[in-house]
Length: 41
Image (cartoon, rainbow, N blue to C red):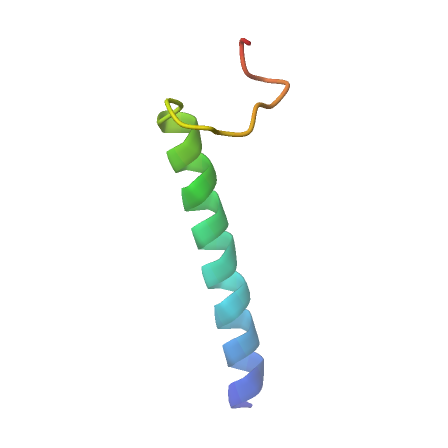
């Protein structure tokens, strides 16, 4: 019972961290960030 909720919590936190990292890299592009096809350069 606890392990099921722990798995959901880890997946949710992982998605939040990934989304935050993507938004941070998109907002601050003065570092060695990965270039995507949507970037102007």
